Length: 121
Image (cartoon, rainbow, N blue to C red; front, top):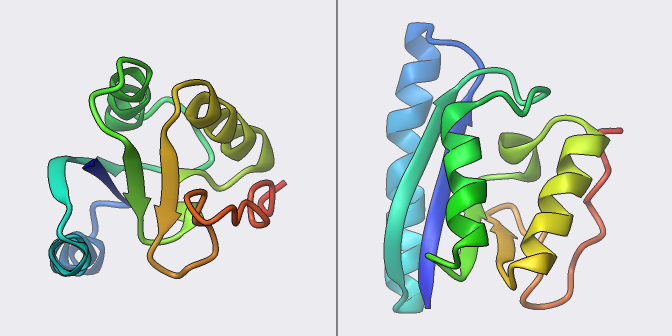
């Protein structure tokens, strides 16, 4: 199975840039422990309340084209910080047979855990 990693911070301040750099090893270790294949990393530096993020849009389009099987995010708020957008991502994932897993274990659609979608409504 191929995995896509989505990383987002809201500003380009120095401490946020460090957060981007610190997040990547978390995903690399997680993927390696599972023996999974990394498809690619999608990274945005913008607010999570908007869907006007170039790499989020690329992630969604690639999911629709089934370029990977699973989207990994540190937590759901990295993908979306409002209920409408999180439900849109959830619906897109279901239509394209793409799973979503967050490293904080709040969402893991492989195991049926969808309870946190819509938390940011």
